[in-house]
Image (cartoon, rainbow, N blue to C red; front, top):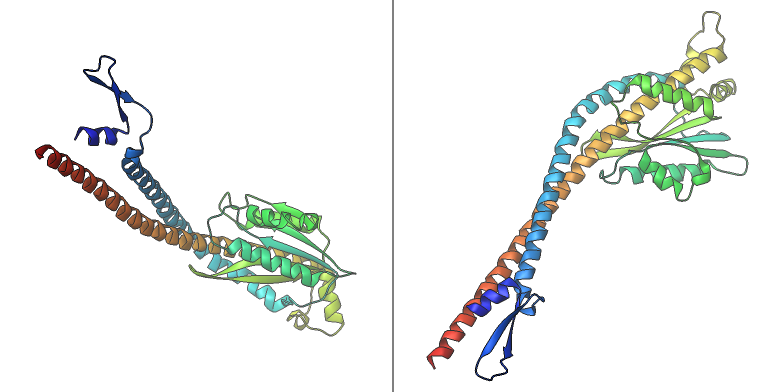
Length: 320
């Protein structure tokens, strides 16, 4: 029993001979003992279990926070879809149009732990950049979100013309996005603006989407060459404004409305992906906790069995 107690304490019992030869003295040493490996391994498992429990609490809390935010953002996203759809019918959406100056607006999130939505947006943006680049063509990025900026900086640093972060720090509204859209139009020269974002479909499903806004000059040129992009040619323009001025105003308004919807769609997809990712993380933490509990019980039972065997062996040795 004494030996088992010393082992549990993790200390070594050193028996040294007395110079007189009649008695021996016991000295305690604070050095780690190899016999204490069983208790140390049990403590390690307990610490690991505690860490996994804390992580599981955090992931469950993050899932609940994402779910509470998703309800309000989803309602606003569905309402914003009615803003840009009339412009698509009026001016058209021609993703395959061939122009010289392309601006790719890649929308991503500022925070991580939301699955692969940011990687998907960056991959689509890079593919679109390759398709719109050429000897006589010019393509550049406008990046919204910290995660997209970090990924594009690795191999496309010189092609990033503008980046905006912390866009979702405050609740999104149309005024905020329209100011951003106006700032983009003032700082870039373009023939086509191509917005890349994740379109929300459900909590577990979202689709990478490209929306194209053509410059007024390209729209007018396509209309004069006989190609009808939308239903604009079916309307008569009244008043003092010319067709170019009307197209300029419509294009700016179309861009701000499309940007507002794209940012909300991407925010909704981000929250849905974070809910799904945190749910998977919580489930994985539960499974890991079950395995650690089983390991802990086996280790503890092995230590108890070993100590009982030592007691029985010592008692048997005393009886002989």
